[in-house]
Image 1 (cartoon, rainbow, N blue to C red):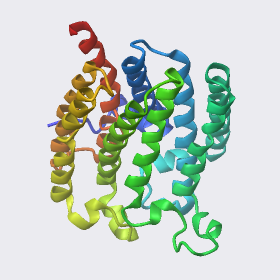
Image 2 (image 1 turned 180 degrees about the horizontal axis):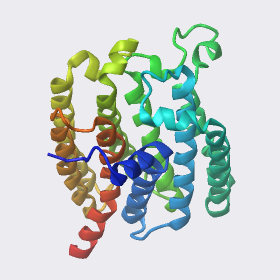
Image 3 (image 1 turned 90 degrees about the horizontal axis):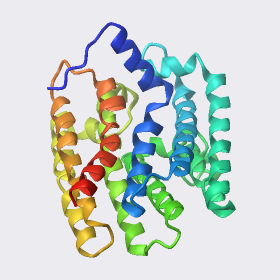
Image 4 (image 1 turned 30 degrees about the horizontal axis):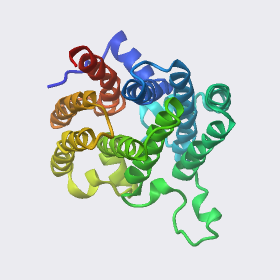
Length: 301
């Protein structure tokens, strides 16, 4: 069982990490971008890591503002309370981070690649802000993508897949279409598991608010079993990618990620686990391990 202490300086620091917005770009963003760099050119591309960190941080701040639109002190998570007290700072930091991401990308990958980044904050606005109904002139009966039953995990996974493709084209503009497609599928699949799992911490809050998620409709145990089954398909995907030459042989070592994921899926079955830290910190850390798997692979191969 994963043990997470419930008090003391360590827990306060982890709550700050989970709430401030620095973990998601560091774990998922930098971990994913570094993985692509190692797969494509066998070395870190530092400008890409900076650009992706800033982009994901900016997107995360926009998403945070969307979460605050129905802020209720009695039901708000510790992350929401942290952000509510710093709303003005969140806006400024998000704008500055996105402009920084565009600047770094323009300098190192060209203006068109820089402009392509606009799709990501736009997707986050549609995801969490109450604009979808108005933009569709009432044709879509939902305020945002997040409120559409079952849609948010697929939607989020799709755009993380695009971020994987962006990273690959950034470091290798002449990359093969097959390689880009496999990177897209790998990123999308792993983020789908991550996004669905993150609803684990909000089961009671989502049920009370009428929000439809797999954990609400299927129950905790059944949803976890489905995620465990999907988790086991990753080695098959990687093996296929290597067999057709879309990814190097070192990509097979990324299969080790299924072990880490299974560990936190198992931890979620324990009643005493801190669900918020398990979802916001532990689950996202999976992506930080990906570059380590590739470093080991390159040393062996």
